View: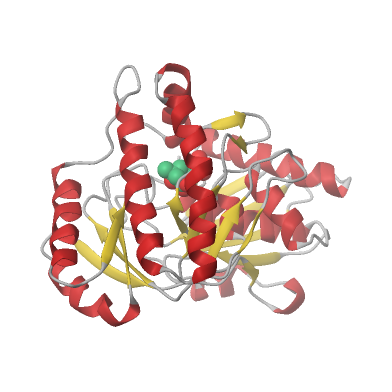
Length: 348
Ligand code: PMV
């Protein structure tokens, strides 16, 4: 075993994942497609803890609680099984995503952890197998293994992984309207939607259809069609989620106002399209040449960051050579407010 550090970035889905075909293996009911970002990284170090009886987890410099540690430890059990080893480890993770606010911190969190832990346990996994491993931590994490635009295939354990897709260059404007932890985790909400919404089966079949169309649009470099599908699919997902019994709502009035402002910008010739994950924050895709102008308009609604396509999860040093934890701490970009509750390994 060795000490390793990995970094991964969040991704925002343009065709959303909402609902599982298998809860244990985290197999999605339908495929999805996302953009891995070039900002808000999670940096995670995995170090052997030969004398420890349990895994130890530190999030943003603070000891994690029992629930968070158990989720990480369960994930590490998959890695230990693959490696045929049983050593416990210390995991130190730093997030620069506002945790639990629907900005995909579980995706970057588990992608970074999978990458660091696989290397720490001397596993030499292909990108496909690393993506399958990250999926076991949090479904959307499998897409953060891949750079840029990535498709996550539905399927069985062997065939459900994410891989990069050619797509036109685009920017995403992230409008953070609320950094608070959301009341319902996406995991629980997803389960409740699948169990109670009368629209769930239509959602699954129409998602498959949209994904096929999205892949055609990406290959053709058709930004307009990519945008139309993105916004329509996001609104369908939020409509579906609101049809859960009892209802769940993630968007707030500011989120809706941003969708309206983007539609208005479109009418005025700035082609842009909105989406939102399981939280009130809105992500807007736009052509690179229009990003600055649109970002200026959206500052009225919250903190605005213009992001681009980012790298896939990667080890931070060549071949994962040991990195002293202190060096990692100094290198990690951290922008999480001190009052933020620690994430349970990310977007809960
Ligand atoms: O991977 P999870 O359990 O964090 O769920 C992600 C759900 C959405 O962000 C709402 C959609 C998606 O495809 O990322």
